[in-house]
Length: 253
Ligand code: PGA
Image (cartoon, rainbow, N blue to C red; front, side, top):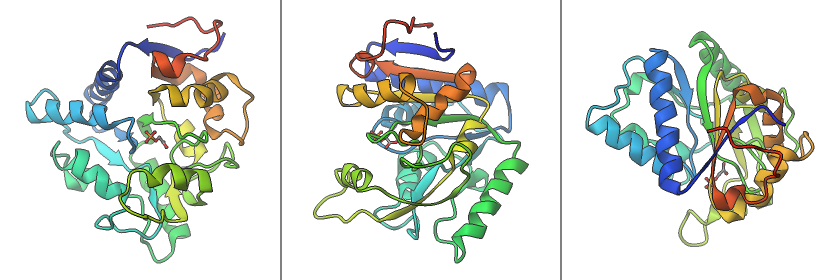
């Protein structure tokens, strides 16, 4: 039996609430800690919950530091493709997250390679990530760590696969051409977080979640590297997404 904690929830709303609870718990128990949260459809409900709690005063950010996980390369936050822009509109601004405590992934730097190294330095000087919440890409990516990413990879520029670009095109109107490159925290960066939460929803993710959590560990499915840190991994998943997980996994809730 794997060591990770599996919570199969009844609904998307339950998944979102539980993920928000973990964010709240982390920042309340580790004041001033660094966290990273994902973009995409999966975390929308978690952000709604966090914004609601921030607006009614149930949660306060104090000295929490927010590190962006990934974004398209060369796109400032006003660019329609910018994931950081999406994050600002969806979470950071409505939740009144203090701007000075947000670390933007340096996708527009003149020298992205050096800037990525500096981003890792900022993360290290913030004490490393206390918590990272991740979504799961249809091709098994975490952040923008596409198939082929190494277990010890760090923040860097990554060429996106056709599959990721196609899958992300659904979020944009018209004949959007998704940028070909991104910058992402590496697999190694992610695995060093002290608490790792994977949120997955929907039947369309059932196959990839099974491969990631129960299949062979390797770069073909970067999320499979999460199996190597299973003691600190929590998976929050709805029934349709969990439908192909083996019976050896006894839910620990
Ligand atoms: P999604 O994306 O939440 O929009 O399905 C997940 C991901 O690609 O990380």
